Length: 263
Image 1 (tube, rainbow, N blue to C red):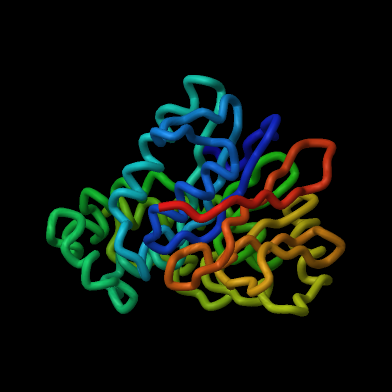
Image 2: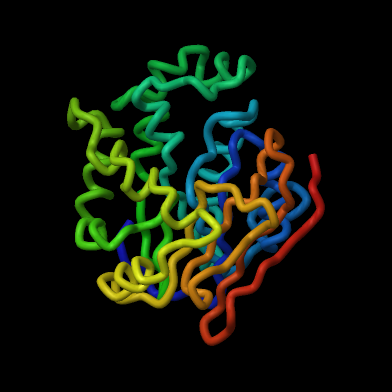
């Protein structure tokens, strides 16, 4: 996937999912992406999911399978599904299983470590995902891109993908750095540094940033004159947050869409 993608006619961004298949389905339906049988019905819609499908819930494998299938169905009608890597995908590849539920330990063929280790079958599937994507006039990543990382986007994407694919032994800096694009908390708090946001956006040549990673207790929130959007609403069952997704249409202000929580 290229780093920069032209703006689609309509894009919906979905935040952290954490092992909740029902929450994923509800979010996709709120976006108008799937029908009652979980098949693509979004036409030329683009979905961007900002990582953390794994951990904290029991449904990880069927969620990855659903998203992968939709990624093959969507282009048939001009749509797309773009999945990004979160810190929890990279943690699992590094065998950090602190947040795995007992039920999920039996997933991925019964050997989670082998499946998700760099070079393993599910790690190779994750290696097809980027860490950072620029779509239209917005940059998307799990936790956000600080200005110091803004010149390293291609490097981060390539290093994370190659490591997951089994092409290197050392975990990449972008996957572990506390200020990196899957770990920083600088953008998730109630008072983010808007000068830092402006500096990053200027370096990237975009108008806004969309991030997950830090739960927003009141739902999707905007900051810094709507240049920063935080879309982790605690959608997974462990958090019990609302079903909310962010719609971006060229020429219009971003809009929060909501829906009921289904099974």
